[in-house]
Length: 242
Ligand SMILES: [Zn+2]
Image (cartoon, rainbow, N blue to C red; front, top):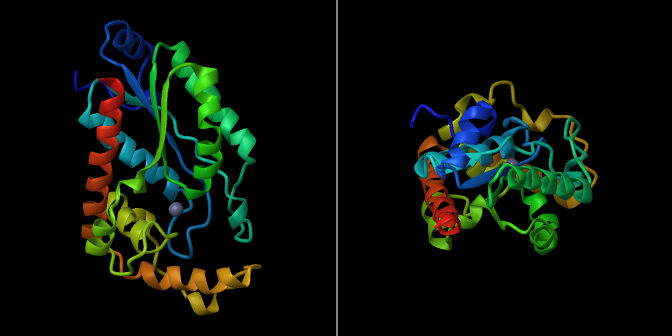
C-alpha cells in the first residue's frame, strides 16, 4: 500500500480510481499558496511549498485515506505588487478556481475536502465565501491556514522575535531551513543597498524588521513548528473523515 503516492498528481488514474472505489481514499487536501516576494533571501514559492509540505506529511500520517491535490500556486497578493516578480490573482478568480478543484474531487468520488492555506492574503477571501462554496458543492468542506495551529505558548517558546507567522521573517525562514534549506539564499544579500520600491511608508520599516527577524531562524525551530502544524492539521482532517 505504501508504494502508492499521496500526491494526486503523482498517481495514475488506476491508483486513484481503485483507491476510491475500494474505499481506501476518502479525503483530499487542497494546498493553496502564492508566488510572491519573500524579502531578499527566501524563494517566492514559499507559501505554496510550505502548504504542500504540511499537506503531504498529514496525508502520509493518514495514509492511504487522504490524498493531496496539485496546489493553487498563485494566490491573492495584490498587497505585494510593489515587489516585482510577485504574481497575483483577483479574489473571485482564486475562489472560483478553488471551487472547480473541489468540484473535480467531488466528481471523482471524494466528499471530504480540507483546504490547507500557506498564504495569509488568501484567508479572508476564502473564509468570506466558504459557506457559499459548501452550499454549492454539497461536500464536507473546511479551510485552515496551517499557522492557526500555534498557541501563544508555542510562539513564545520557539520564536525569539515573538512574531508568527510574519512574512519571510523568523517563522517562514525557519520552516524553509527545516523543510527545504535550498530555498534560503542569504548569499549576496545586502539589504541596505537593495533598490526597493515600497510605496507604503509603513511597509518600509516592516520589511526591514522582517529582514532582521529572519536572521534569528534555525532549522530546529522550523522542525518544531512543522511538527505542531502537522499534528493539528491531521487532527482536523481525521475529524472530517471519521
Ligand atoms: Zn509567506
